[in-house]
Image: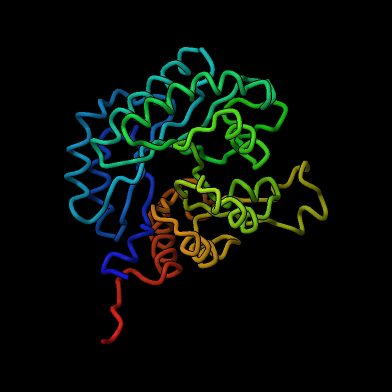
Length: 303
């Protein structure tokens, strides 16, 4: 155990790359104690040159935090104008990741719109076969978020990597060592999948590369009365510390499996801690996750 042992699992948050000045955002929130940041983009890079942005972002982080990953969320498998921009953004993020000291680029797999997961596999192998080779040449890993984005096994618009049966298909179809998962319990809870048994099953595979800090609250009384297709919402996304998951258990299992990396809070989803309370909720989540980790400062044993 070293002075940096607690930081083997860093606690951070997401920074919207579409923000006109993400470095300024980092400077404002860094004093709250965030240790890592995922710089993420929706579909396009929003006019940013990642190589030019890197020194500004790293200067804002200083010695207090790292860039854990770059996120590109869109559909790189389709051929519309935005989809092609998303694919180009993936390529740019992979090329630029080493400039940030980041070893992970994360996002959705994409899918063929309106098609089943198996029908999307050939295009997935074509696109991410090339991207995984590009990433491997730069020491970068690719992590797929486990978000359904409203999709099912039979059809959807954004992502095929949202349940374990799909993971088995994509990893078998493209057995690249540098392709894995960006996991969070929330997206499994939204499918009524128990997250902790899943985490314990998948950690030994070495395929969990990064975690999003997002939780959920399931309203079992609503399910019992109205079902999951009724008019009343039966599940809410939550900031860690406000949801159903015991993150001490999550981090315990991560440590037992030898996971090192980051848990970056994915905000802007909590139905209560939003708008003016957004950062209050995120800082609560930050401090809660640090407590679940064992604190925010290494305490040496007596000698």
